[in-house]
Length: 283
Ligand SMILES: NC(=O)c1ccc[n+]([C@@H]2O[C@H](COP(=O)([O-])OP(=O)(O)OC[C@H]3O[C@@H](n4cnc5c(N)ncnc54)[C@H](OP(=O)(O)O)[C@@H]3O)[C@@H](O)[C@H]2O)c1
Image (tube, rainbow, N blue to C red; front, side, top):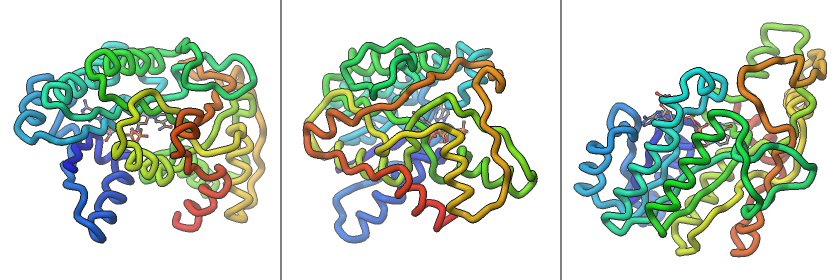
């Protein structure tokens, strides 16, 4: 199976390439075509079309995205170009050659109201430019290629810049930090997500999937757990979203239930604390 991956220098792209390479060492089932913005700018429809029709992958996995949620608020056109048009370019090219298309999306397509985990069929209502651009990306993929997997994840950490790395860096510089305690979600390791994506692309179970680690917590709980697991002595103060005052609106309760994965028997996500423990042993 020939797999084209976009955004290979990003958190999820790195992990996917690593896992697929490892699998290839034991059996040569995957041929990997690694790209990032310098080799494939997904907003460039001509470049996308040329590469896809020449290389003829069986699957395209789009991990490339404009992920700076606050910057999206003031850079709306680029956010939509990358997160919506980029996804559409890939999906349309995949359709032309009969390939599957896997689009990675986000919990930010929901508005964060309510207090029970959202399922795949619950109505979306994005509150930020980032969320709106990712929601349009989902819709365009859905419209352009029936052989699609739309995989919504949340609070991702792996290789690269992420909340865990930021907390560890802050702990080396400060004695006290403030962390938001009124946003609830599910911290998700790229290890679990990449493994889920590799299992999904082998199937024909097309559709929308929620794909996050099990369990839920606030950013404050998440930070506190990181410091406890690393035996770091730092004072963590819980604050409100209002006090932090960031440009983009974030969902207050954005827990996703991996309902569709459960239905097809592919929900192999660990409890978020277990995945975090393994990550911290390596970082
Ligand atoms: N991070 C999270 O907490 C989170 C939560 C929910 C969903 N997601 C979704 O999960 C996916 C993976 O996220 P991630 O954290 O791995 O992202 P990431 O680390 O920010 O990586 C994104 C990659 O895409 C590249 N890219 C940006 N614009 C591009 C373009 N026009 N063409 C090709 N590549 C481009 C980036 O390159 P540059 O670095 O050079 O810009 C980067 O290498 C994304 O779809 C994201 O929306 C992430």
